[in-house]
Amino acid sequence: MDLLRSHGFRLDHFERKRKKEARKPHELAEYERKAFGLKAKLHHKKRHQEKVDDCSRICVRACLVWHTCLRCSSRWARRLLSARVRGWLV
Image (cartoon, rainbow, N blue to C red; front, top):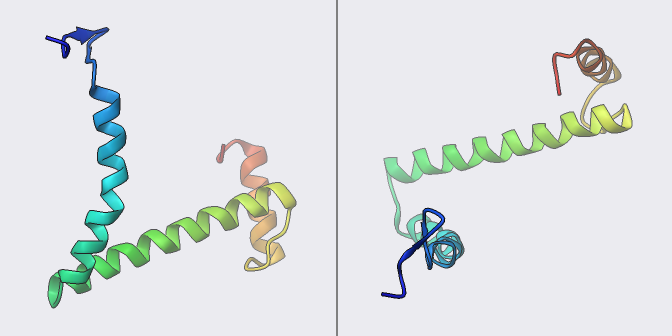
């Protein structure tokens, strides 16, 4: 009876959630090792798109904070800054 609910959660909810999140990279790596063919191609495409999105997010942040970025032209930085001033970007 030690798994009774407390504030809407089971008492071991957060511990199980933490362990599940810790196992996720290992399970993903195992899938990447085993996948081949079309599934591997689609998976790699998805991972590459995530990487591109992360890089562009970092680049946008750099443009907004430092008003310049190594990858972006100054025109792109000015456009981002004007968008931020107008309230289009948060």
